[in-house]
Amino acid sequence: MAGASDHAERLLIITADDYGYWPSYDEGILAAVDSGSVDAVSVMTEREDCDPDPLVELGAEVGLHVDFEGRWGARSGASAKTSLRVQVERFAEMFGRWPAFINGHHHCHARPELATPVFEMALQIDCPVRAVGRDHRQWLSERGIMTPDHLVGRTEPEEDPEPPDLRDLPTGVTEWFVHPGYPDAASGSSYDEARKEDLDLVTRLQLRARFDQPVWEGARRSRFGQAFDRAGT
Image (cartoon, rainbow, N blue to C red; front, side, top):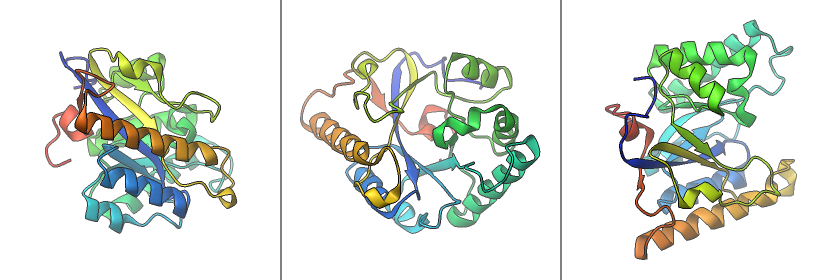
């Protein structure tokens, strides 16, 4: 139950992060969902631009992108636990169900003050959590938390938008996190222009996969619910 390493095959989940961050970014994510270029979307329920309706209409698999950027004051365990509970409950109000998975903005869900509340919440609602590295993955697995076996994706705009491992994926479940969107300098995001690169890349790769051999070759695209055998996700 704790991981996905029992998969003898190679599975790939492409997750679009940051839904709700900015209207033009949401438009890009919705375009990626509509074209089949991503498999899951992580949403920021604290942001005023987080509109659940388009995602519901498109039938997207949706999880929580935990946002912990200062509204909750000092980054303590108490404020982290409260923040997480509020965001999960708001997610349930928006989508009428619990998140299909949990991850965090800038991987904040793996910070010391949030890691324990996140794993406790994941156990409560029975959902996978993104592991941000080997140590975090082991920590989650030891606590009975489902998590992908591998994680790829860029965190800085100067990095290559296509992860080198994408063309030679290992056995098990790999999550590739991307940030598709249409640039808008008013957003204040340092990743602004890179979002168009991500959108162009996943769209191009999906088009190739439709008419030719995908760059991930024998790996199979999946959702979290399929990868972790969870009915109804």
